[in-house]
Length: 137
Image 1 (tube, rainbow, N blue to C red):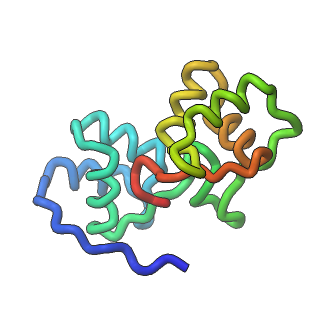
Image 2 (image 1 turned 90 degrees about the vertical axis):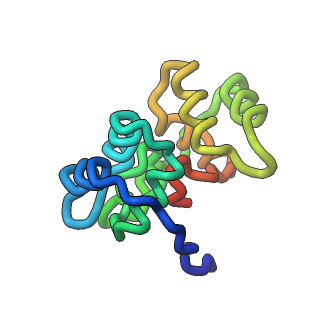
């Protein structure tokens, strides 16, 4: 079981924090909205994730389908089949025993397939996607 997240000191950025508050609903912010805010304010994904933690805003609706969905926690399902080419690309992009989220996104972009198609293939191949770009996992 994971321990509590480490508290990190984040410098105040009123404009960024206001942008986050405007997009957050009920203390939650979707992965897509977080990525949009990151780009809009020039904040790195990791720093934005830490800021969300400090602001007690929960990330939801992972674009890979891995967390933040109700009533299920994740919605990604194993793919019926995975092409040898996609499997090779996933395995070549792995760091250790897992595929970083950023690599899953890159594979989806190169192949012009939905991000969730990559995570679905990983489910079938029993490959864990980690770490999250925003630090959610």
